[in-house]
Length: 467
Image 1 (cartoon, one colour):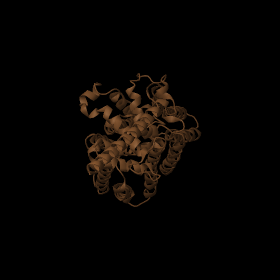
Image 2: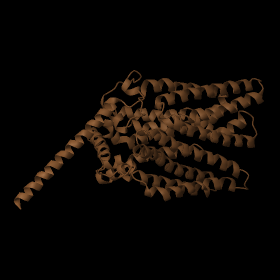
Image 3: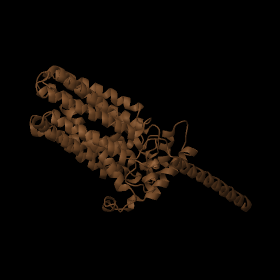
Image 4: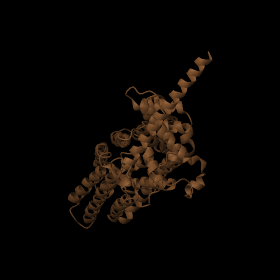
């Protein structure tokens, strides 16, 4: 009943391969939120296991749609130097919801009869209403509008996002428009079939970029975060011998700890870049799992259960903090940046689908793992988290301090699979090559504008002479 929700999320994320670009970002989010509300109603009205499972699958469909869309929308409407911070704020909002759900569940555990679980499930509908109130007034992605040939709308959105009184005719807005359109014109990804893209016969780097985004999302889940998110109370009760009420209180407090450090990631994601933040966070998570394994192992072999249990609880909290600082945000941000402009929605959809199917696998494995492996179960997660360090160092190019179009240009250079020794891939500051390319396009725009002015003056002169 718990893990079936993730199957719905997987299907919902995959569905945006078809609907994501057709509907546009705001309407896709509205559709996903509506489906979540329908799922919430089915769950709230449940009087049997089958109805509850159907409701969870339906709600999962909506969540999958939203998670595959929101990050892309955020990234495509953000400026280069704030893109990472804004996606981190987005993830902090997700953890706010997680924390609310923990405290709501704790508070309503004292409510009579079925109210204890019906109200928390029904409360999901409140957030759908928030989406209805806000989403219709937000702009679609300018990059998606350009891809659809809706140039006038795109320049209006770019001007609004630029701020400072910019208009669709402002040089900075026209320069952004031309850079995005230049990349789209060169990619021509839509001229390739899905089979050609997936078999590596499409434009350079498209398949590789999809794999990098999808595996980054896989790392988010196989870190073991949802071992704690879904089953923290169960672990405290069955592995550490803590009372039911105290276990629920600690789980709710853990969600606050998680939220605080998810917010603190705002201050490091752009300053230190995706690679360093991911690797440092993964190392800290691995150390936490090792300490938890040692504490629970010694406890089962006759050690002081109170002291060792306290150590394990403390490091579950440290794990939340470590995860929130990097392995939480970077995998949700990276697929929205790394994928080719033309197939960003499809790449993000595949990445989110990977996240949810890995989530399902982790949730399925947790209870049997705790029961059959005991403290050894935590060693598995320690080893997996540690593996993220060499994987990130070897294969993942830096995306901080780069426009989305810079990342397209990087892959046009046909870099090797290993990027650790490629300065263009790993330097934190924006490469000078990309700055010069933007300046060249802006200069070309100025020349074209001057040429058009001269042509207009010439036409005016001819018209006067004829008169």
